[in-house]
Length: 231
Image (cartoon, one colour):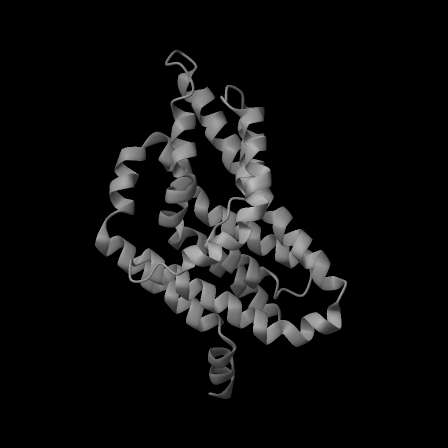
């Protein structure tokens, strides 16, 4: 189990990194708008950086919170969770495969999965107005904390993976490393939105990242794991 846990953190980071193109579509507009929310002046770069950092820190914290809540629920039903382990692993693997198909623009079925979280987001989204227009890092942090609940197939697939972790701490760390993986592109978006938008829509880039996500998904499936152990 220890080796699997060591592997899960860099894997979660890679999923976040590979799924960044999807993140740019979901959150990139907000991150880019924060870079334009500060009047150009002597302190422009510093304030711009603080707003973008605040938003992304809040976003990652919300991912960790989601994983923590899910893990706490699982510890209340250990026996049931153990029985559901293969099912959860299958769901996590399939969601990663669906996300890869969406990234590669081969099939957009992941959008149906994202609708599952729509009722929750419908209640949370009005709260975002309290933090806009964003003028201070604390507002950006609050906006990020709420924005992390936006329905997203990439988050759901990684949460399914986090649910397989044996403790609350390891589940939270899995989502933390996932969030770190999304950070490079999201931070860069604020400063180079147009360049990254071209990369996000580049067909070959999307196909390569989509294919790698599919590989991660297949690797997650219980059938693959049992096949590897049998070799």
